[in-house]
Amino acid sequence: MTRAIHWFRQDLRLSDNPALSAAARFGAVIPVYILDDVQAGEDAMGAASRVWLHKSLMKLNESLEGKLQVFCGDARKIIPNLVQEWQIGAVFWNRAYEPWRMRRDQQMKSALKQQGIRAESFQASLLWEPWTLSKPDGTPYKVFTPFYRRASLDMPPPREPLAQPDISFADIDAGQGIDTLKLVPDQDWARDFLADEPCGEQAAQARLQHFVENGLKGYKEGRDRPALSNVSRLSSALHFGEISPNHAYHAAYISGSPSDVEHFHKELAWREFSLSILYYNPELRRKNFNPAFDHFPWRQKHPKLWRWQMGQTGYPIIDAGMRQLYQTGWMHNRVRMIVASFLVKNMLVDWRVGEAWFWDTLSDADHASNSASWQWVAGSGADGAPYFRIFNPVLQGEKFDPDGAYTLRYVPELQELPKDFLHKPWQAPKNVLRESGVALGEDYPHPMLDLAESRRSALEAFEMMKAMNSAC
Image (cartoon, rainbow, N blue to C red; front, top):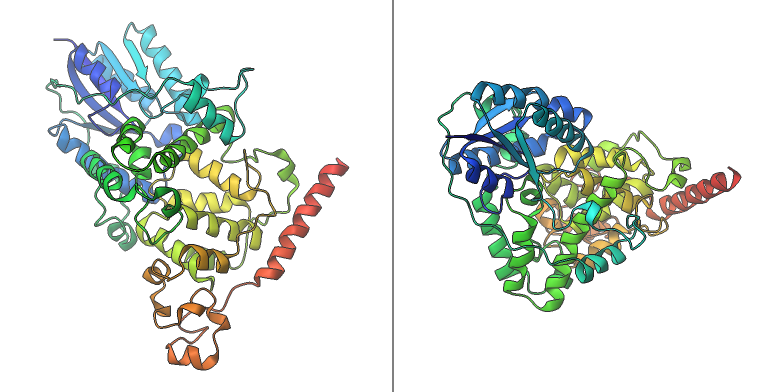
């Protein structure tokens, strides 16, 4: 019987997996996963993503009846060797779109075809691939609204998800154990932060079902309230391909108003827009999309950076978000914008410093979304927020977490503080602080900087940048 390799990458699922279905039709399947840090280089996954990947691979292997063959190294060398050793007739995979993966995959496909091996890739991680969605003049979109309008009005609707295929496995057992990849570092943080987080395809399907039944109603407004359940929590599952965007897109029609469904579809489309930007700008993680910001006086270091990283800034909504990130590997999207604005505008730290911290601590760290979103906040990105839009963490906290339900979950030391002072504890009278059991500087830090002063500094820096660009 002919044998085919299905090369798992960012498609760690059995249903709606076009490449796996093609391999099952071809012959006996050998499922393979390769941790390729060689080709990834400095874009290798961060610590939190690796922990999620470990758990997801374990679940995938269970679904594959223990047949997953796992390797570590340069996939360009490993796959051809396996093809020869196992007498493989075809290799199938689903496309990935990070620059290093695309370069590697093109080289792989060319080398396999030269050997007379069938090598075929499929669309499985996106609703619309970047090269299929451009402006009428053929140039890529740089603004989200027309991108989404073109996708929703002019493109064919996303296909329905494929059923899980019937698979006959080849009798092969030559890979390493998943534990040998050493994806989980020997630290309390790594062992604890995803201990209770379900990973894998079945968990992703259950999470999607829970969202459409309980969280989609009211999504348009509720998605900005971090204490509410109007978020899907599918970002990690989508990144690792435990669930497909097609599943998420079509499931949204189960419940929710047309407005809620459309806003959820827009969130899926923002993910696609970010990847389109990356496809046409492969240095997005490292270079300002808007080169005018090359003259911005970013700080590469800050003596109090650790306070931002560890949630000790003295601004409760920021500290709640950064603690949630470090403790759980995830942060609510509205809070991501608030903490990012504080770093790049109030602290004047280079957005790439924040992107690198998120890359290491987010379990959903995605090359395109992480880079594009940080540049959006910094004002340097495609369709970026105006630089003078500086989020005030006090006002943001009062608006989006008015009763403190989210903030107090991660900043419990302020539990007894009256809600009027929760997002600005330094303004509470001394007797109120004393009665609430809060000693600023001991139980909870003083604000690490002055908001008004730091805003003035940010706007001055922006004017300096504009002057330098005018002089060039």
